Length: 209
Image (cartoon, rainbow, N blue to C red; front, side, top):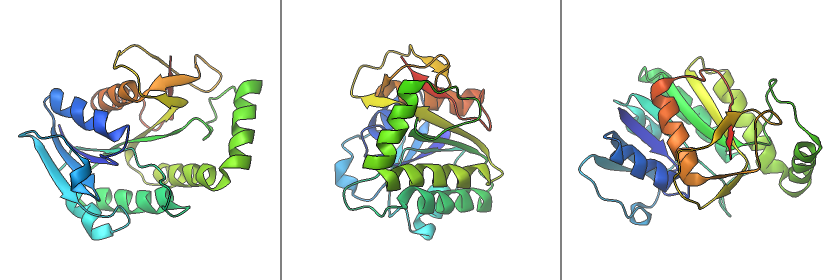
């Protein structure tokens, strides 16, 4: 595949780029600061830009088969970063006729197939108190994706860890065949598989151990 990774220098973005290249994909890594990406490869193209710059996003999306988005909040990012970024991404995809989108968000974003237990409800309550704007932005950017008309999958993850790439994890929904943690490397594994296999079009699966 020809893929573009938004959020390529993040803690999930780096294993995503590495695994895509190892799997034979041609990768565009969209980065604001190229020096932060220490990966070199013949099939890697670095595209510098700001995720809120629609022209830069269009340049990155053009000519790809799939978009992989792992954008996260940083200390100085705007409260609605993900929502505005996803509008730019989905608009660019529609303009250049790129259909496949695989996005990452937290398990605090709910889906109708969830069956949250008390622990799950407590986590969302804590997020609503400690990081309400981040939680609302997560919900907002998923709403943009749902309304896009694209062939999308939103992958939800619980607590992310810098663990090993095992390729062994559960795919379920909150409270249904779900655990409380997952490694970033295994998140990358699932996102790449889903981009190819397309088992969860229009769905929000949760992956965990």
